[in-house]
Image (tube, rainbow, N blue to C red; front, side, top):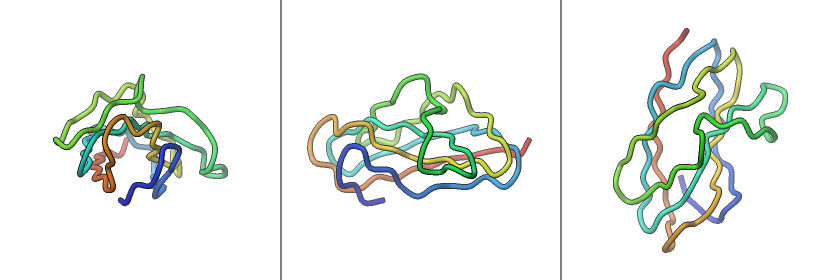
Length: 103
């Protein structure tokens, strides 16, 4: 995913059935960012601030897994990665690994 600035949101992942986010890992190509993975209602994928994380994790150039605190998803709920800040450097790309299990 190409990065541009803090506040960017990206590809919305729709979950067709009730599920649980069971694993999340990410990395960037340079520097570091903080981000949230928001859960949003089917009808409002552009709004909502319920994150699967308690606080925004810092993502660096090393693959790092994050603790999922609120991973439960309802059917047709969106998962939306959103950059909170560019913490350091000038990252231009981000990779995400999101695993979920169907409830």
